[in-house]
Length: 154
Image 1 (cartoon, helix red, strand yellow):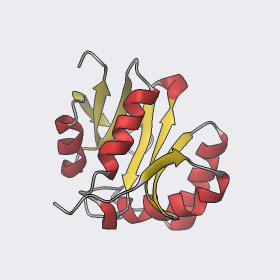
Image 2: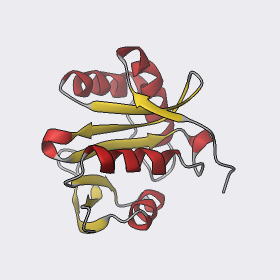
Image 3: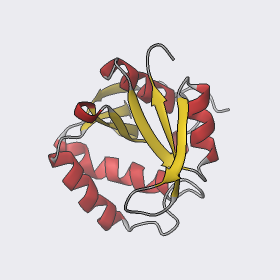
Image 4: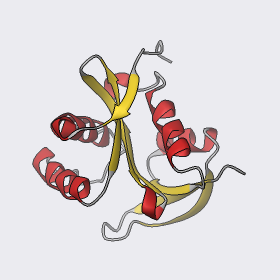
């Protein structure tokens, strides 16, 4: 495990969109993390723009001006929609801080989905107190996925 980084969490701004896109693409491009046919950065940026304007609440982990990771919440749906950490910042507490933020922001609980093949994310969520709800197919993308839930009661 790497030494912990010092970083802060803050709400993302519109100016952060490109840096969030870079983190999302870099992390999702790791083996077994993203889709088998990874979208281009431009395609992912188009999705990011759509999600951003449709109500994502994005929090970024920053060290100075560098975005290390982000969490995108959909509180009205009680969903942690995305949580990604730049590959250079993995294992340094960024993911845990972002997940803790999601727990504080949605104290009545939430669900999330990750790819079944993403064993590191699954182990992280299980070690972080989330409950495996089911294995299913990702709607619209037809890839095996794992669904987790979190509630204060565990």
